[in-house]
Length: 283
Ligand SMILES: Nc1ncnc2c1ncn2[C@@H]1O[C@H](COP(=O)(O)OP(=O)(O)OP(=O)(O)O)[C@@H](O)[C@H]1O
Ligand SMILES: [Mg+2]
Image (cartoon, rainbow, N blue to C red):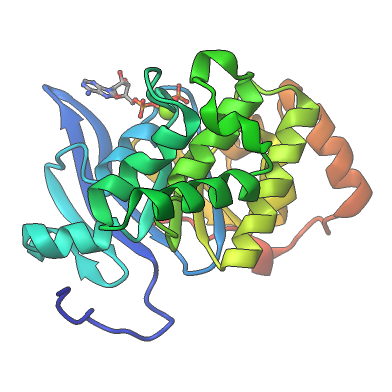
């Protein structure tokens, strides 16, 4: 049994990271990083390539060892849990990894059943029914169940990987660049799917992305990573209005023209808006 969480009130974030330090050899990647993922939100996570977004995700998931700091998931300090309690906690999240989304030697149905086999003790018949349910949930046709990843399009692979992430009915979903490699229409459809599932299932979603359209479309808040820290966190409107040079370069640079156009259309910001500035994080 999981020990009782420190505080079971709704105010406890789904994930709370404090003073996290992660490095490889002499290189520090995350340097006293603080971050809260609130329950029920879609939190977008941006940052330059190679700054540590995937490393943070993998560290929260227990796949990379941290040097110091604390990580609490649903109020449980992950360092304080024994193996069994950790496994119970692990069941409550699902992950769509940036790389290696699916096992190439398994069909879609078998891929979705990998976490089921690991964590559930149910019959093959029930696992088959559950897998077909997940396949329908992510908008794949039933015949995708018997296909191997090499027989699927990029967009179908993303959907199948999402179905696997949802295999255990998680409360918390980690998505690392879910729309990368998709064309704009495919990416928008995938965003819609995530938004629909998030609302229908009451999910908390942590989404690493470079896709400004996704940030606009589905994120309640956005956090920005630079120099090993979360330098700002707030709504997209707040991020766009912020005066921070990195944020301006990221959100208003040449590649963000479309976003700027959207911004002008939908969110004319007053020249001074102190109340809507993103909370700069300490550290
Ligand atoms: N297992 C590892 N061993 C050594 N270095 C690593 C390891 N994993 C990641 N790194 C390094 O950590 C840094 C951050 O990598 P990470 O994959 O988190 O970047 P990212 O922000 O996700 O980038 P991208 O947007 O390109 O996916 C990089 O310099 C990377 O080379
Ligand atoms: Mg990455």
